[in-house]
Amino acid sequence: MGHDLATGIIEFILDHFTEEDEGTFTCQIADGGGKTQSSLVLIGDAFKAARAEAEYQRREYIRVKEGPHFSEFLTLHVGEDCSVSLVCKVNTAKLISLKTAGVYKATISDDRGKDMSQIDISGKYLKTPSTRSANWLVGASAAELAIHCTATGIQLQCHMKYYTSEMNIAWCHGETKLAHSDKIVIGGSPAMATMEVIEPLEKDKGLYSIVITNPETAHKRTLDLSGDVYEKAFAEFQKLKGEAYAEKNRGKVVGGLPDVVTIMEKKTLSLTCTVCGDPKPQVSWLKNGADVIPDDQYVVSIDQGFASLTIKGVSMEDSGKYTMIVQNKYGGESVDIVVSVYRHGEQIPEARPTLTPKTMIPPKLPIEIPQPKSAQPPPSPAPSTPSPAPPKAGRGVKSPTPTRRK
Image (cartoon, rainbow, N blue to C red):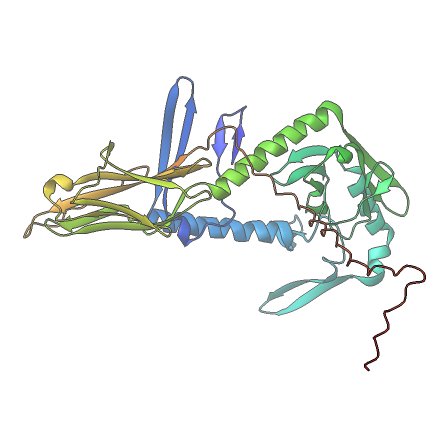
C-alpha cells in the first residue's frame, strides 16, 4: 500500500490477482475530524474483466521488462525512389550478461521467399569493448545509497540503469566486506542493488558502501548509518515489525461465512466459521448494531477454533444485518452477513451484500511483541557427599586373640 502526498492518491497493489480476490475492496480514511470510506465491488463479470486485464498487463510487463521485445512495431516507409523499407526497433536487454547471452535472429518473408539475419551475443562478445563500455555506464549511473525499512530490518538501496547478480559488486561495512548470510541479505531487482541488515543492533551502526567494479575503474557510493539517521531508520523498522507481527497474530475470520443468507421461517439458521489468532481471540455477535444476547433461541458457541451463531425457528423479525466481531490485543476484523427470512410459498427474496462485508479492527497501541525467552543455564549438579572413610586403627592395637578351649 502506498500514499502519494503530492497527489493524494492511495494505492493498494496485489502482486497476484487470483480467484480468491473476488469480493468487495474498501478504503477507509479517518482523522480527528471523522472518517469516510470508498468501496469497489469486484464480483461476477466485473471481477472477470478486472482479472483478465490484470493477467494481460502482467504478461506485458514480463515481456517488456524481462524478455526481448519490440519497442517500435513494424512500419512501412516508401522512399522517393519508390523503395519500400520495413522498419522496427527491437530491445533485447539493457545490459548484455550471461542471462541474456545467445543467438538473436531477425526474419523477413513474403510470397517470393524469405531472408534471415542473426547475431551471436555470447562467448568472446561478452568481453568486447562495447560490452565493457556498457558495464561502465551502469556503474556510472549508480545513484546515492537510500534507506528503505522493512518489517525484518534496514535495507540500503542503490538505484542504477540495470543490475544483475553477475555484476562485480561488493558491499562493505567500514573496511569489512559483507557476504550474504542470515544476518546480511544481498540481492536486487533489474534496476536496483540492495543489502538488508536483518534485526539491526548497535554494532551494525557505521559507514556502509557499495563498490561497482569493471576492468577500467570502480564506482563507489557510501552512506553513514549512525546518529539520527540510524535512530530514525531503527524506529521505522520497529514500527513495521510491530505492524507485521500484529497482522500475523490478530483475530481473523478464516472462512465459512456467506455474505448473504435467505432462509424460510421456522427453519434453523447456523452461521459457522473458523477463527484464529494469538492470543485466542474473543468473538461477539451483533444484530443491526445491537448485541446478540444468548438465550434459548440464539445460541452462541466457540470451540477449538470454530465459532457459530445458531438461530432456532427463525421468524420474519430475525431478518437484518448480523455482524461477527473477532479480535484480540493485536486487532481483528468484523464480518457482516445479511439475513433475509421469507414465508413458505413466497418468492425467495434477492438479498444483496453490504458495501463493506469485512472491516479491519486496528491493534491496541503500543504493539507489544513478546521477547523470546532466554535460555536458562542448566542447574549445576549438587555436590556429592563423599562416603565416610573407615576409622584408622591406632598404633600398637592388635586384634584380640580368641581364648583357647580347655
